[in-house]
Length: 439
Image 1: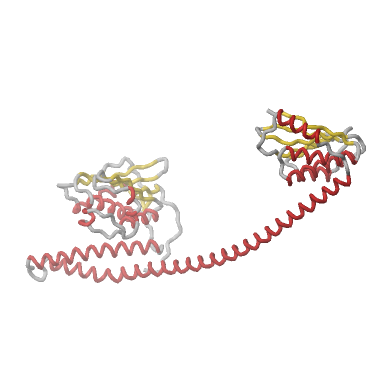
Image 2: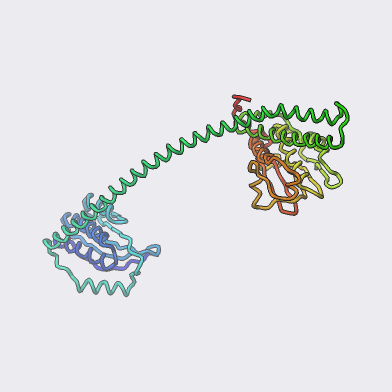
């Protein structure tokens, strides 16, 4: 709801009235709590429009009002030139620049300036303002008003000069900052290039080292197997125990080398995805046969649940099998009693195939859920010390999932168990061909 309170009105017949309107504009804005700068703006805008109205050759009128709108108050000054006369365009432009709002309607110009929030001008305060205006009625002296305007102009110029100096100082600071930022960007780019080269060297080193270690490790494992198969004669119990240590250590080291090589290839973009139709039931049968030797049926049951989704989906079965083997072998390692359940379902909303491996093992605390996906990171636990691993399996699974256009998630509760899931798109996403710039 809009409410209008009248402060005073002044007739416009000559130049003296224009001076009086300017003086009253300054008085009213001062009594209403406007800043010194806003007082000058209001007085200048009102006097320019009043001068244009008086020069139209007909009697005009200036009215000072307080308008309430949307819980805010505005000082409104309306100037009418009378008989439909129009104020000059340059005066209207000045009003637009100096006031918050300016409207022109059939020879009447309404200018508004938003008032300070406090104190609110009600009927009581309005009466006090009217009494003060009646008491301090100015004399329209053109000479004195010109002197006052000159002082205001000098003050404004001083403020402008001070602001200009501040702007120059700020500009210099910004230039210095920009030079620093440019230098910083150059340093960052240089460090990024060094990191890129170091990452390439690391990947190349891991790849080459892994290849170099594979051959002697294969020889060690083969020789250990020959000795254990008694190809060169019988072994004493102590010799057999030592050879089994050699075979186990070589197998663990071989697993580490294979994981390192896979990670290096993925990071170097040299892993090729073999996309082909994958049927969940066929994949589960293969995994069940492959992982049967790891299951201690007296303690843990490995259960592959039937899958309702029987259609083939597009992906790389070998890499899916690699991820699920890692999930299942970890679940078997860290489950002393209970079951490990492997399942798959189709999520129609996301059009994904979600594999899940749920166990009843030791579980993982919330603080360690991200740690397990960091390379060479392992959680302190008696079972962890008894079943040592490389710390690369889960990071490799996450990278393989990303390579297949999917993701790896985990939900776990200490003492209850964990569920690792692999979500893959039903239709394999198109991607650029991998680089093939080395082994």
